[in-house]
Amino acid sequence: MSEVQTLVVDDEPGLLEQLKFVASETTGGQISTAKSAADAIRLIDENDFDLVITDLRIETNEAGLDVTRAARKKDLWTQVILVTAYAAPETIAKGAYDYVSRTAPGNYLQRLQKLIPEALERRWRKQKEEADGKVGTC
Image 1: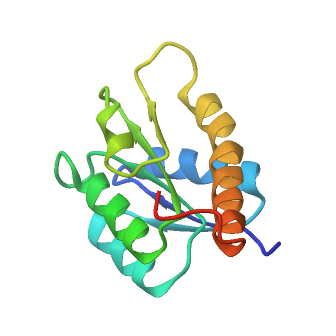
Image 2 (image 1 turned 180 degrees about the vertical axis):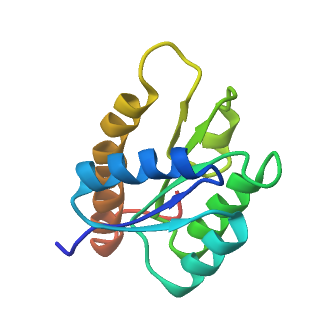
């Protein structure tokens, strides 16, 4: 298996560094960062990412969903985890693997750290099923 490629997106430098640190520690792979949805979408167009971790509200209320759509359009099995200060269960129906609320009780970085391996496992499982001819477009 090749090195995990992760894109981390947040417009707040301190939060971007925290997310990057968690992603790096959890995946041990290559981490790219973007400070805007436009930069993230450009990087997605230019690279192949296994995982995207993005803030939901970057420049607009739903810019993170634009990033999600771009990632999933490029590679259906790219897993996206949204990080937000707002409740966002509907984001899963819009293509995200899951979301982490910054305002929920407990440490959101620990929840993110737990979700990352689950998301990557799902990616690898779906890729294998697709290669074996066992999966459609879901």
